[in-house]
Length: 352
Image (cartoon, rainbow, N blue to C red; front, side, top):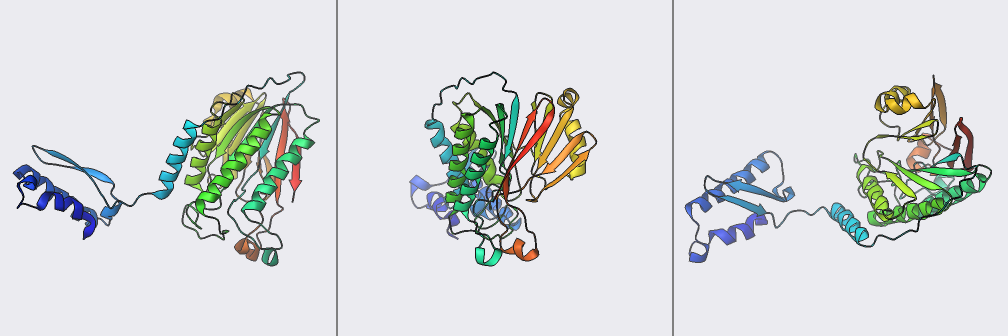
């Protein structure tokens, strides 16, 4: 029972007047011990209690647990955010040419799954963290090259959507064990951070960028931290804006277009148009070109629900061992969509 050793040693040495307890202090100790007993009776490990208050009629005691299990991941993210806030880079405002630039590129590297592992011997394709980065970079470069005939004044970059393969080492948020490469969780996180910074820096040289973060099922916590970190990095950049809230469905308007974005593992596809109309009624009334981009299934599916087009996106990631064995194969790709005031006028796909 070493969890209270330091605490009890401080207050129980009654042979030394320095540590002699008053009646109120003794009552406080009793209350603390009762609190411990109640926590254990409820199945709560006292080591998971960071701090708390125990009170008597005439006194109040704040205590910290010296054996509290530190949340290494949360402390890592907190320290990283603090570090980046202290060293935010400065970006000069870009003066874009405005003549005839009236197109928006929705660029959506979906379900990257950095940290996934697949062997060419087993699945027919090699995939790992390095390959994930290479594919996204190649896809973005290819799509930008093919966009040259569409003068852009806005780029919407979709961030998230299982960008990280796991939330805790080798497990998704819900605890599902997944095939992962041998990199540590913080290496995977930093790889994703560097990739998004590189992509955004490339995109902002073409047009103003709006970044939309979509929460997802593999990496609920880490992807949110990642989005906050990326937004912090570009805090001093006037040409990049963010929607990095934890909301599961996001919306954005461009001219006559209303865009919706969601991972695709929650609300049913056929319910998304009515949710869009309900959650952003004012924008719905102003725009008669409406599109919802979903993810999660790694494959192409598109359907018009009256005046709303709902479309799932391909993923650049290859199937891992389990998905390959089950027959869940996909056509790896990064996709982009060109919109003007008349709606979606072109799709650009880079296959792998």
